[in-house]
Image (cartoon, rainbow, N blue to C red):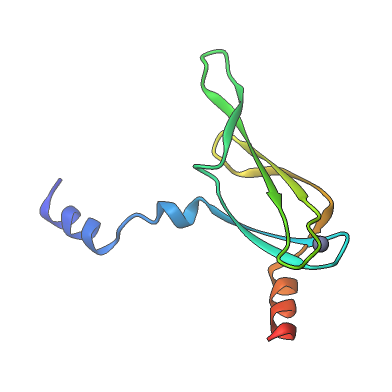
Length: 111
Ligand SMILES: [Zn+2]
């Protein structure tokens, strides 16, 4: 590695962590609470499909979310990822997917 490349590597550390993080926003079907949860698409995904050389072609992430209010309804989220760990399908039971804006609105209301 040349001097300038080394310098660039020092100035611009790879942001792999951020790249592989996904925020989930879900609303509980029972109490309406909006829950935010951080998913690491690298460490929390497990290989679910392989090609004929044994290389993963797809991954699954399963999360069970429970709100902080006294409801305790589990919300089951399943994410299907392709070989590059991009989300291609998302399923939910016990709740609904909502946007970050809806979560922020709930936080603003409560503070
Ligand atoms: Zn709830």
